[in-house]
Image 1 (cartoon, rainbow, N blue to C red):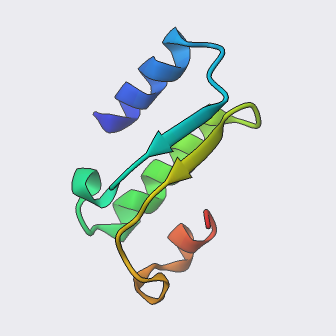
Image 2 (image 1 turned 120 degrees about the horizontal axis):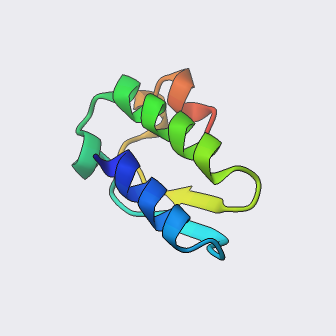
Length: 71
């Protein structure tokens, strides 16, 4: 559902250049595989024209490589 929301925001506002997502673990929980899939999908949707900034309340050591690649 959250991915659909992000897609709607980007589609409805074509001039967005920055997207901030705060506290993403409150949305997806601590399922880091799900988080990695969501970040991959948002990255594809945003492309090169939108800078995406996401806050994650976890230590870097907790994160798998699939999430770390977005750091």
